[in-house]
Image (tube, rainbow, N blue to C red; front, side):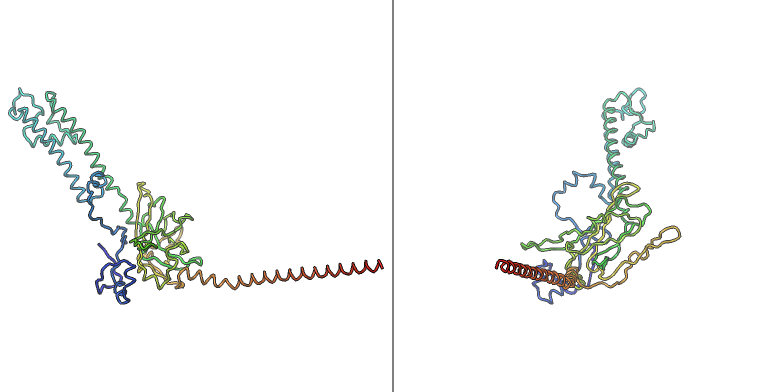
Length: 407
């Protein structure tokens, strides 16, 4: 099993859950931090998981076709040769037994005797006749006669079973040859992922590219965060998988992969990186698994390419170097710069801290608006009171005039 080592291992410590490691003394915590980092998915896309203690092995035989396709080439070729050899030997033995039991071996060269198979004089000739029958070669030297009903029945059985064996084995070989696994070798991921600002927002980014001129149809990208967690009830879940949004709701996860593309994940409140800062990132035990899927344009078969990034492969404050240039009448991709990055000004705070600082910066403006609204309300109240007093004064003057006129 391949392993990536972040720093040399000095002291071997027992494997403990995260909640147990937090209760250790500080010097032991530092020693545990120097342990090996085990990948869940390797950089070449192979899953670093071995299945052990599988007792129900009969399940592999119920799906024998998939089992044969999944075997390595050397075992697959060995089984291919052995199946045909065994069937030829088996039916050759039956042909020889029929000839032996009918007494054909005792009448070799007798022109008055009608054998079951002409010119069959031993096991070797019976084996050759079995090969000719199953492969329908038909050299014409050994021929079954019409005086042998058991031979006619055996001929029918061998022809049918031979067709089934041919369909099964040739089908396995065809599927194994046409598997799109090798197509994934030309789908490349950047060596590192980066975190930097994009359009005023903190984003996690990585780059994907296709080295072939034949494109991947209906390409889509997904990302998973692999990180152990502990629930509120105290349950420890190792290697918990969390979705990382790379444009599912906006359609940005569906790619037109003609030239290398930078896949971006906006770190917001729904992101698992919401509270992770630059200083905290190296302390995290996480792995980002990226999955690129699509159909091979030449064959129409589904292809999947995978890669992963651990904390030491996530660069904070970097961007990818542009690889696309405009030439005379076409665009050129420089794959020498595909994995290159350059440093850029990026806040060292987490996205949550940046959002809190931005909200605090907007508070004085909010206060000023509210104070203006209060002042405006007070002015309106004062104006209403003055209007009421003026109305009362006018009413008093009118009343005095009416009393004087009566007098």
